[in-house]
Figure 1 (cartoon, helix red, strand yellow):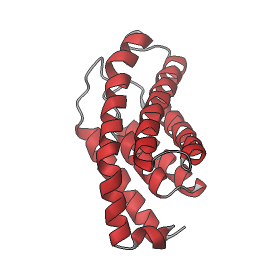
Figure 2 (cartoon, one colour):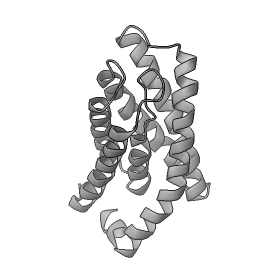
Figure 3 (cartoon, rainbow, N blue to C red):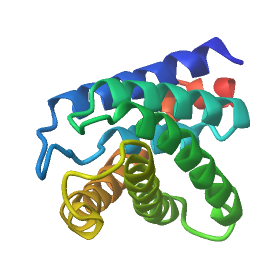
Length: 174
């Protein structure tokens, strides 16, 4: 694994963790998972199985530690690696067939929905219940997070890609 890639991915995770930490809970202790956008950004820029596994595990741990959801650590540890590999697989499938910016933004929305579904389902099964009905949590937290993350990716992806290309970090890291 390339050290430069690790440093860049670490920065993405740190930015995501800071955003996740300061994001207030909006409904029943759940907050929109803004950390996902940074995880997806790292996967889209450095699509490699090792990077995906690392991002999924570290993002899950940090999201779980900063979660305001009761018992949110274990569901985050389950949700993030699964979501990371689902995003990675879908990214590899459509990367050649769609505009990169539009495709990555749509995949970010899909990935956020996958993450929210896996998180809520695992929390329901492991913790033994949710603080509110599944549909209410999905509609008030997951859907707004999906929109926020897709917009964030639409804005951030071209900026970060241009910066990495201009500094030659993308070619060296790939």
